[in-house]
Amino acid sequence: MKIAVICANGKAGKLIVKEAVSRVLDVTAVVRGENSTAAQKVLKKDLFELTAEDLKDFDVVIDAFGAWTEDTLPQHSTSLKHLCDILSGTKTRLLVVGGAGSLYVNPEHTICVADGPDFPDSFKPLAAAMAKALGELRERKDVRWTYVSPAGDFQADGERTGKYILGGEELTLNSRGESVISYADYAIAMVDEAVNGDHIQKCISVVRE
Image (cartoon, rainbow, N blue to C red):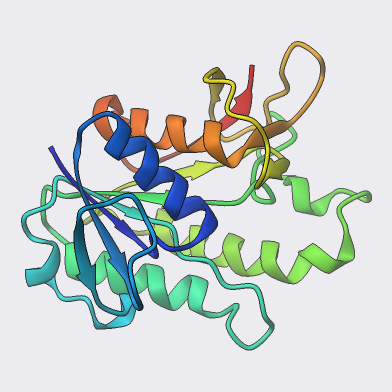
């Protein structure tokens, strides 16, 4: 299995690469600058400059793109559209590092985490941008995508416990009533999905056990 991790130098991307390398998988880090990941194979290229030819030999492409500033938030949509366009009609699976804001909190799937009264105002623009990108992704029937949402409390420096619960599109709590996961445990879940997953054109979520 050949895996490409796009934006591999980011916090999530770097840990996903590390996890894949630890399992002796064939992983390529796609980065704009110098490679700072554990990958031995590197494709130095901007996401928006990637072509179908660049990705044609990969079984799985993991999109770890992130944008946080007001002027770059629309790139959640444009970057995902670009990747979908160049993977359209291929067998390559696209796994997307998602957000928790779009997880549903009711059985009818009409209310999301980001709609709640306690959701921080500072995160609402990011959640809205990612929700828009997800909505557009749902319309892509020509791409074998999987959207992987972390828990509500996504801890960059959290410990690697090696255990997680796999959920669906609804916010899942662990036995302690928590919605939390570390980037390291999220990376385990992402690589598990790359290797064994079959959630094609579905949204899934992960939370610490």
